[in-house]
Image (cartoon, rainbow, N blue to C red):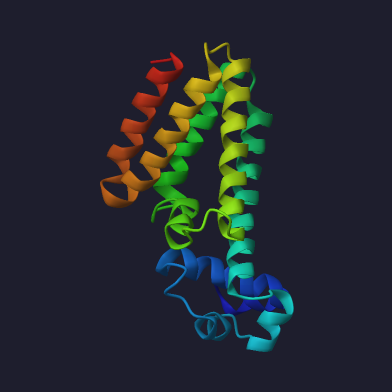
Length: 190
């Protein structure tokens, strides 16, 4: 992020954008508060005025990821002319996200690996995101007339996890192709 972009943001927003980038690229536990405030051109006092602590900042980072993903799903739903087209846009969107935006795996899975307590605030955000995503897929699948949208939705969630990890570990284009091939088979459009 350029210095000009940082200057236009509020201190809270700047800290969150910088922390989000660092958490995703370097891992949450390997990034310290001092590193975040330095990169955000802020002070510890400013960070703690906006976030109660590092875990609160991690929660805000994941909520930001969730908001971005929800906006992506919403925009795809608005341009689709049929339920089948909306489903295909969702599959393409998942595949493209893994190849272009989340090139270091799923931010939610990554955070879960670093916060093993299922009752932590971080894990609660991850659980809510996954429940929302699953429900969105089930609605798309039902609207498109896919038999057993709950079971197929569970399969698509698993395939999304796989493409996000596979795109990071293996060739992103091959992971994308494998995801689309298997997802289309699962929904009956292959």
